[in-house]
Image 1 (cartoon, helix red, strand yellow):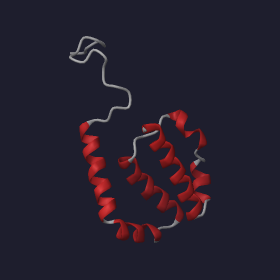
Image 2 (cartoon, rainbow, N blue to C red):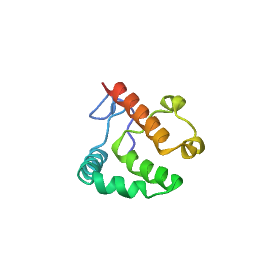
Image 3 (cartoon, helix red, strand yellow):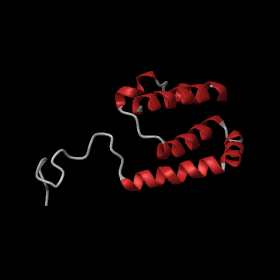
Length: 106
């Protein structure tokens, strides 16, 4: 049975950007895993080649950080440019994106 907006127990619908409970528990688990296994994780990441490093980082990051809206991606370089960067340059971009996300939450 399909409901129309305003006909359910929550007439306003789920607030924009609200996280579901399963996603929140996954993020919490992975955040805890990354904090407690930080040294081993960082060592493993350092051993990866550029392309594999980016894939691994993005695949874990997507569970820790909320997915940004399309408009928030205007200042993020294309994937090819990101892969071509040095580790330090990539980390700078990642830090900047994380800071933007934190500022939007607060």
